[in-house]
Image 1: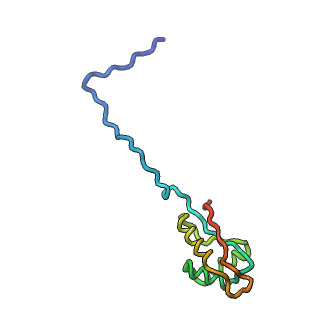
Image 2 (image 1 turned 90 degrees about the vertical axis):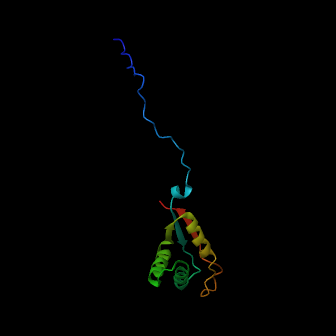
Length: 119
């Protein structure tokens, strides 16, 4: 069976103007995954220290801070916040700079926190 010939267009028929393809710049902040700031448990900080620190650095109420301290104590860690990586890193630095617990002689430094991608 022979192939049919392609249709012919008459002169004067124009094709519509197609939009120009423009490369969009990559915006890393829009594509960035949120992160968790996670407080880690240790044996050299009291509940009072954790509650005071969370109130001072995050503005958390005593009740919320106590709840987080309880989770850290029982599970070994607790998510303090979820947000942009830069924001989490700033809060992590503040935790690491908060200083030792004055109520415990063995406390020689601040608590530890890690920043991880949110799942």
